[in-house]
Length: 90
Image (cartoon, rainbow, N blue to C red; front, side, top):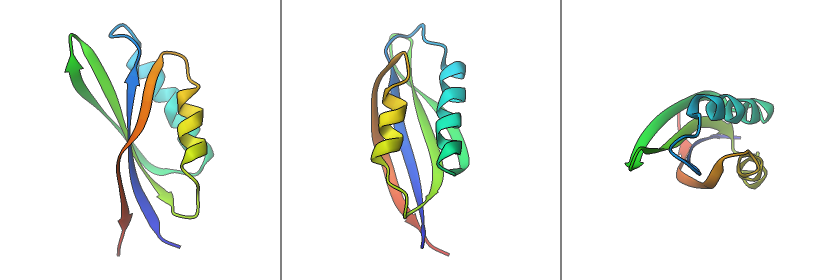
């Protein structure tokens, strides 16, 4: 099986949301599904609101929907979408 490179764009519901706390919770979810090379980036949106971009490597035999649903269940999350998905070669 190959590896997928996934990036989720996660929107908090408020500019006051603690992004570091959210990143830790997201990391825990990703580690449960054996994601590797987990990385985070913050993207300014508007009026102090920042999106979290969570990138990770995942075996392509794993399903993405359950991961997205787990992240959506977290408190202070407005939306979760796949921003990028590629198959790794090499």
